[in-house]
Image 1 (cartoon, rainbow, N blue to C red):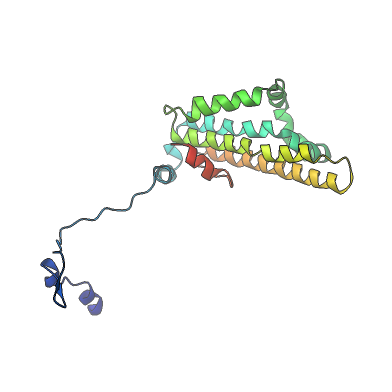
Image 2: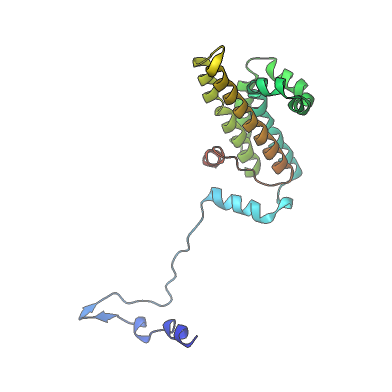
Length: 209
């Protein structure tokens, strides 16, 4: 402890002009204050929400954020055609959502209209909290990522054999990811937590100001 105290003891010569080997340096002012490192607005807002706990998010914000995660799931429900038809537990799990899914798929431009509405009415609207805008943007980014498996399936559409097995595996993987994202995002929002989906959260952070 004595050695540590000596190391951190103030040096009298530092208060004036420091001279070393005949060269004069600028005078050091012991009262000079240096700026503290600052967090980015996105990261700071995230830490504030996490530190305050569940009570920091309003009930209405939780519900709006949770409902948004149904959008990419409904838009990509077709990727579950193999799993849903082969495994009854998935049929039982998805069955309560069939009316909403049929309404979503009833008009071919519903997905695009919902995308425009969520982005310009919610994400770009400062009247909504950042919590709502972040979760909405995360759901939008997740839906945009569905373009890639859709393009792959359209360009590579085998009828049987090994190619069909690859398509079935790809579709099933996409569906399971959407289902897990829905359950995780919906549950986290109901508890006022911040769900951060892989491949999605960073892109959503950059879009939400």
